[in-house]
Length: 67
Image (cartoon, rainbow, N blue to C red; front, side, top):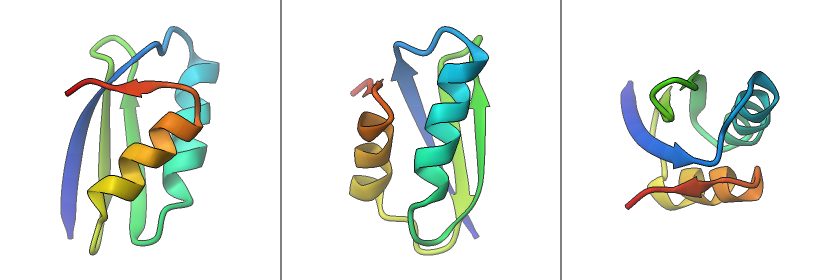
């Protein structure tokens, strides 16, 4: 199992976190999505995670991934 960490800008509440969790959890290989609002952080656990797809899912949820 691997994990990827992202800094996500624009999340301000639990609804934001839920939107990100929902979109990212639909990406193939994802087994768990942990959102830390205070740190603007998203950690994704899973197998064969595709960085591009994960970033696209965060954007699809309406948020930006910091470089």
